[in-house]
Image 1: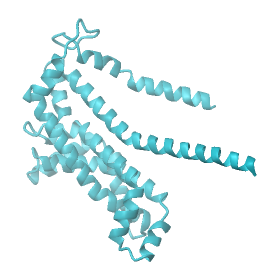
Image 2: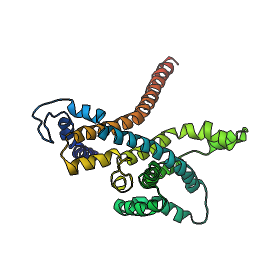
Image 3: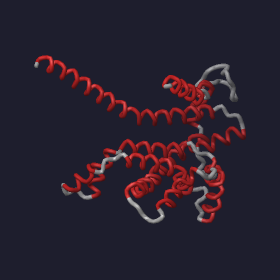
Length: 276
């Protein structure tokens, strides 16, 4: 059974990653439009991507909006997660449903609603409007990650710190946050990726001056087959891959250190037993 599950997982991963084996070679293509296989290879697409204002400005906008989305999402997701896991209050189920609602409602419906509502608030074509909209779609996943981590958290560690005189804020800063740092990192990473990769809502409310990179990519495909879009797609893939590696690296190092510690401990114990 394990062999079948692993084989299925490998097939799904290969199916998901297959388009990148086409997009990445196309990003080095010397053709004047999108073409595969490439007739030749050049770095011109990447030069255009990092030098043309039509691409650099949307990239900057996406980075700024993504960082703003992370801050806004975490400001809401952290207290919401603590409230849902550690407190019982009237309307808790409704509150949880409202947080998860963006995962249920179609994105196009939400985009139209944001366009109408933010238009009345004059937030259309503004950084704040896009950040608020992206925070709403990133909130459910970040909250799920944090609530799952909090449910497995041993609260006796916090109680021990408070019994020793630590204030709630000090306990959170020195005990809770360091232990749950991986969950906070993953929640923030998912919020950034959700914002950086979102295109539908950006088409409605970002405007020309605040256009994000996915919106610019959509316009490039619709108006002309600009090969620079393949370089932008490769950059997005590498950015997400780098974020995952940054999160996985400390986990792998800690796991390797733990395994080496157990091996050394077992190796030291066996000679001692033999001597006795």
